[in-house]
Length: 142
Image (cartoon, rainbow, N blue to C red):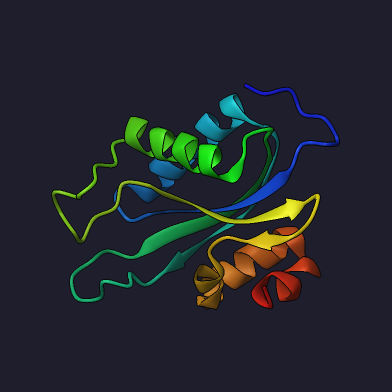
């Protein structure tokens, strides 16, 4: 776990699962809490799977963390957490996702969007907006 300071960047994440989603999100949140400081969470919200068809709905949640890691290293750390929670790439079942943790943006010290396309989804916008409020339009404009 890192020790948070006011100089550590703050990052916005979007979590999702459509395979035992409440349990997987609980485990993901516990993993984030062990690895990072300053964890803040949105409510959870159900959304339709982008895959459509027979894919189960997702449960999504936004999170804010503080980390001294650079974005590339943070993405690797998040992939490792996904792997610890049962995610395999490529997926043996393309309709099921045990856990997905996306790095959406750096919020502080300067807003930088890493995955602005994820903010096109209305559920993602609501959940992220719940945590960052007025910064969301700034991130969508990057």
